[in-house]
Amino acid sequence: MDILNEVEVGSEAAFGQFFSILNLIDISVFIKLREYTVMMPIVMKRRAQFLETCKHGARAKTDFIISVCHKIEGAACSIVGYTASRRIGGAVVRNKAKRRMRAIVHELQDSFVPGYSFVFIATSKTATCDFSFLKSDFIYCLRKSRSRADFGMERAHAVHR
Image: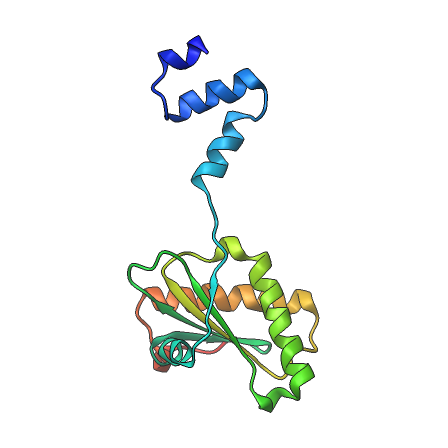
């Protein structure tokens, strides 16, 4: 414990020396865990949130999914919403499409930068396509709509793939 007295208490070096003494954890792992804390995006619940994002957001569309992204100033986390209309099928099909979109968001939670609001809209092929194709289109739409939102391109300026 004399080593901790030489280093300022509360600094990363003190934590590193403490953990190396106890042989519990490597300092590089501890620093990475401390610096890169990832929050799961918050899920939209209210209709007004969906309408605000869809009205002011930038769109990107593929065969399997439509993504709308709206930049929110000063937000501490990202907000995500999922929607599937009756046009794509009955309740079972709509629920399957939303489950698949939620699964992809859970896998890609590191890609969601704080300060953005996303709405993912299912198409008629979302529930039936191969999951790997859906995931690749999802990543494409996510990046494309976020880059368009950064440049202030609203719905009318979005070019479809």
